[in-house]
Image (cartoon, rainbow over the protein chains, first blue to last red):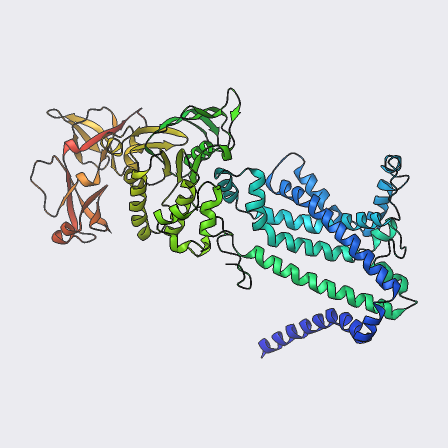
Length: 274
Length: 347
């Protein structure tokens, strides 16, 4: 009897939790009919925000991938003085309030910032440009990718890289033929997380890049701007972001299940590899 | 045949400093307890770690020289290293693993190692014996000048091990390149290698043919490692050309070796005879006790009486009807004993 009450209590609490988490999503889709959503997609504000978001996100993620991967590999495979300081630096944006990150970027790259004069000498002005959005997104989202990449590289069996070397492959070929394929799942998962974080970026972007339609106004900024003018547009943009986020979450799970398959067995996913 | 030479190679390890010189031209085994530095030697030869001192040469090619600062990276040393866990690439098929070095098509090796039917399989689906064949094929397809085997039989269960050991024996006999293998099992080393070096805490204690090590162990460790019983006692009396030794339990035994003071005697299990009545033959040494253990290994059996383990045939075991706890006699000739340590000696 007591046992049944206990189980009932847990089920009840879990149901409340799940309902709490699902309700906002349901609310958005209940408010907008698919027709309205499609209708709003041709709204210039929504269209511009979508394009800006996509462009800056893709650029930012490309930069994260390009710079983050070698950095993560170095941090995962080498121990050097200052290693833990470097790891802390990598993780810093994760705990920094986004608004602070925005102020920091202004103070560093703004006209009167640390590197401001050197940048303007080169004819580069960053703040309130689309590049500033990309920089803000890359700064805030990078730890999610780099942390996961470090974990994935650390999980690669060092015997496999050693075997590759003795078989005549130099460090670079070893990285591309052995390390990267084995860490692939984890890297995809990390990139999905980083992408999702970047899409939602608000605080640092509005501080460092402002909210200029067609230039720096991303979907979250447009949602805020349209909030008291065109609630339908807000809902439509939210609906789009939810779809993309769900897709990213799925990618993350697939990536992680690749990574999890032990290194001794083939990562046969959906029975596709063979 | 090529020769691998290690001269005064030194590596500082956590608990001790490994330091050894070694020349490998046929099949050489390094045996020793785990943590003796065996794998470190292989890694140094393969270029996976850089020693602190010494020189490593393959024929006339210098792979490492501490003095002149030469260090050839692993990918430019022609070494075939087979890892203890085989380290097959899990994301590649058997064929792709073998072709990884990009020197030969896999076909020849698939046939030679009888793994053609596994060509498209991933390593994760293979048995231990199959994995080893793929690992050997992959290492040889790299065109090595020397083959290195790290504990080649340790990852296998005892049943597969005998079979794979026989396969390996055949393969090594047909190889044109020198092989350096490490193992913690003297029996494996004796079965596979022409020459065996016993390594303890980073130092070579003795090198020689397996028969040499058994016949003339340099110290008590080598003796026990090669499977000998060790009897501790003290020199008491001298007979006609023999030395009397009073064992710690009071039994008096004779040896044809000479020694003084505290003595460690080595007696090999196959030199011991077991009987259920006190024997009256030429064997000078008889130890009475009860049977405390019987272990059958194929057609042989190890029977422990007092401080001694004897190896007899299972047939004899049945004929004598030996049972645990039964009183029995173990006898051995004075000529079958070796004094492997005296007080102030090596152990």
